[in-house]
Image 1 (cartoon, rainbow, N blue to C red):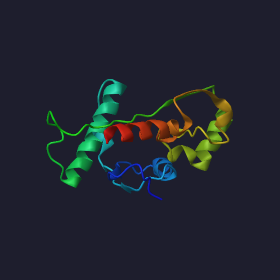
Image 2 (cartoon, rainbow, N blue to C red):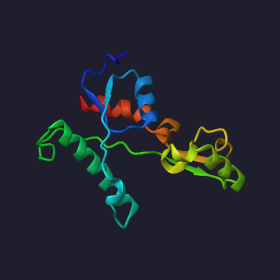
Image 3 (tube, rainbow, N blue to C red):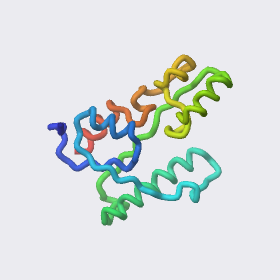
Image 4 (cartoon, helix red, strand yellow):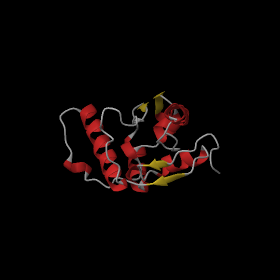
Length: 150
């Protein structure tokens, strides 16, 4: 079901199943196009610089595949960057960590922990942002930014 309020083409530059699910729940039609860059080849001294460098490299890779030019010029169409929210956990016992590793859960999610997983949920201390933002994409922020971009 397409969201009738939004007519522009949406490209999800991520292979994240969580982000796909969230955008679909929001009613948007979108195309998935992962950047497929070598993230290990990009390194910086500060984590915040690494996040920006990776985001820019991924965006440039996708823009290049689409054949878009002029996107960095002064009067180019605005670019939106949606970042992840933050979760603080209480100390997680070694036996819980061992179960998560044995189940392979840590291999399928960024950061290695899922906010909503039954083994980790009891250890969530604080969520800064929204649970859907932590899982991959804040619905309210995405909606707001898409509306502002029109």
